Image (cartoon, helix red, strand yellow):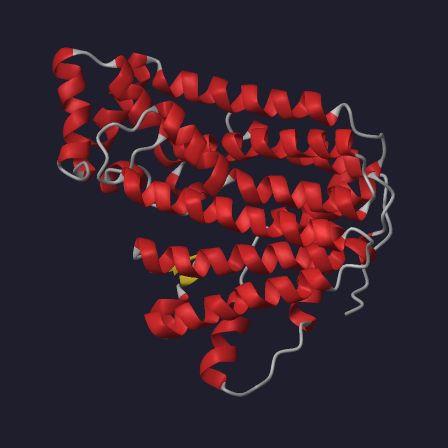
Length: 334
């Protein structure tokens, strides 16, 4: 497993592109048997998907920040990406989602049993890749990886529980985000720091960046689900409201609205979703309540918190790449 990852360049965007290309090359080179085809074909289908490779890039950039070459951090980066893909396969089954990244989901192309089995193998592969990391801190790396798995599963369980829980608050929602979304983002950065022999203070800074970005990413997704242009978003605008999902936007609207206005939003929860022809009305009402503006401000606030923690890291190409990622993501809501 020796992909040709280009050396650092001055331009952060170009450097990031070369890192993600290296990750794609390494994923394509992972040795997979041909038989049984019913197992390995769906696994290869997943790994060949057109992902952004954000999480492995975070591993590589964090490692670079502390002087570790990309080649040394690559197994941990691949472990994170393969594990992330495992979660997507199982999420699609649980959410009854028929598409992923513009392609039919694994359980649609094959069936649910095959998708579950393929996901199980992907999870096992992630641990095998993690074990290939050349570092004296492998024990800590594996322990933190397992802690992430526990937190992510807890977050998924809470998300499922929220569907029938009428007492969900924004604070509880944020706690769920910290597990379901933030845990893997946080781990990616911390793994890179561990490979780079970062000390406890720097690992703490990386964890703070990950927690803040995890919240920013999820609330930003909640916001874009209702406000993005349909062609750019690639999903049905207002899909969360159609399904009655308790997002940051809906929970904050329920907290702010009173009287008939509160009843209007409450029925989204009670009825298990909103009719498609009322999505525009929901957007108008949320705008009037200040919910959309608050969501944008909250996303930017969490990016700012991450930015402050980022300032504590050593200067260099790795930190520049992390800063560029944050800036690109924040521009989507400005």
